[in-house]
Image (cartoon, rainbow, N blue to C red; front, side):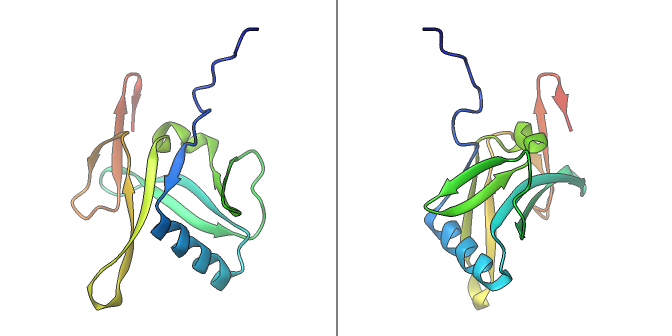
Length: 124
C-alpha cells in the first residue's frame, strides 16, 4: 500500500491549557461556536494574527478539535501559522495577553503586533 504524503497531517496550531481555558470562557461570553485563526496584512512587519470567535462554522477551513473546543484555521494562512503555539498569560494589574510562538517567524515588529515570514520562495 502506498501512503500519500500530507505535509499538514500534524495539527497545524497547538494550544496551552491556559489558552484553551481562555478561549472556552471567551466563547461562553460571546456565544461563538468556534475560534477562527488566520492572518491579515498589516503593521510594520507585514502580517498579524487574526484569532476571533465565529458564530457559524467557516467552510473550507481546517478543523481542530481540542476536547470539544473547536478551532478553524484558514487554509490560506497555513503557510504562515503551521507550527504555531498559542498561549495565554496573565500580567500585572489584571491584564492578560495571547502569546504566539511561531517557528515560521523571521522577524517581529517592536510592539509585537505584526510579524514577518521568510522562506524559500516565500517572503511577506
